[in-house]
Length: 570
Image (cartoon, rainbow, N blue to C red; front, side):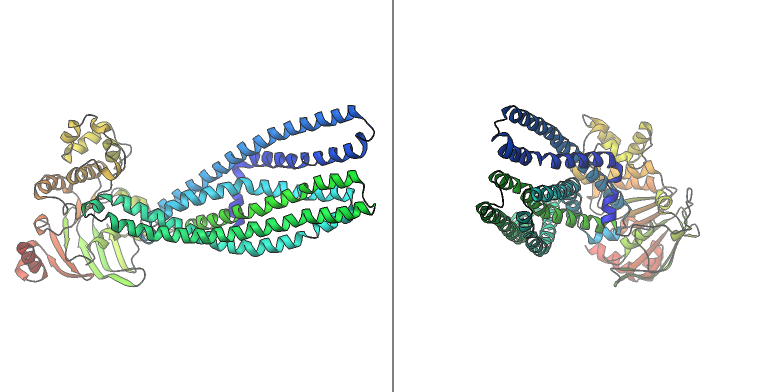
């Protein structure tokens, strides 16, 4: 994991080296104050060399001005480097998320993924900047302080440094407790983000059913866990800081008592003793920096581990010999297809279908029977566990996903529109389309007249998930998107089931136009919408129960006829 973290420094090695050199100079400049103090107390002041006192003072001031500039460089460019690394990680994570299969998002909530992309990466950025900087400054300062303090009094120096192992043991012991606590805290934050994202997305449903109190109760469960986890984290952090601070205070007591005895016995001069007391900060300050750095280290390491967890999730992969196809003819075959979710629950059990090119094939049956699963398998959104799916005689596992999905257009009941303009949402069907092609697609989808009635026309912002549009308008916009894509294969998954009858008739006209000349797979609860299909299959419990035309299935008086009667009674 360390190697992967260090790889993000490579594009910024120029700034990194400059930042480390600046940090090194800052730590070296820090030694000059005790040196000047010792020289003044032992030599310049007793010998009344005021000229050199002024020169030393001015020189020290100049060094402090230089340190100010170096500190500015460290703070500004160091943070810029950290932000750039954070941006690269965020970009890598986003690109990787785009390659993950549908199953990953079935198992991971959006809010938790967002938490990893924001909160976790922010902590990683801080570690990337302050980590090497703190380590270098602290390590150099400790080494320099040891050398310098040894020149004042070796035995007193050894006595002080002998306390360091105690500090190290305590830090390592309490650090493990901090890591566990902060890991739990991050999980709680991710759960809050997930609950918040879910509640805000469903705010209209919440208001419609007057269930604000229920949503608040659900939110407070995660919020309560967050408080509990943060309390545990702060307790561990409090124990860590209070204990380590007490140990560093012992250093001052040791210097005061031991140094006083050395002075009393004539083993150290008063000027040296004063300089030693001033200089002890050279050792204590970097030690405290390292101690305080532990918290940031734990945050950063925990965040990077969660980042790596996403980056290590297996992406969708085409077969090694997968080929890119041109425009498909549209002949689809399912041969003894089996599919399971979570590796246990079987959704399809030996389904075989033959959908001829240019024909309309309908799937009907009770909810949970496997209709939508078939719609997801044809574009290769999920893997099958057994059997084959063929497009124009070629197994889709041997076709690159990009070229396969380029040939398929999907219109679903739950239309997703982006928080952008009408033009941008239609253009999503084919990004290189011209304005004329966009308008033509809108006209064929029966949405152009409505768009032109708006003040900003195609430049109208439709809000998050198209909130400013009605259900029918959103559906027609999604149909326009598919018209623009112009695929040879069309999948209509409950495309009109959530609409009223008047709107459904308007949209059905657009869908009839869209289906013309394409291989079309239709999933519908309303049997009236698929009675003219070339072939209809009834699927129940993951198996094909019946197959035939509308008239043939009614004559069989089986499952399809039973569905027809139940719909008529409804």
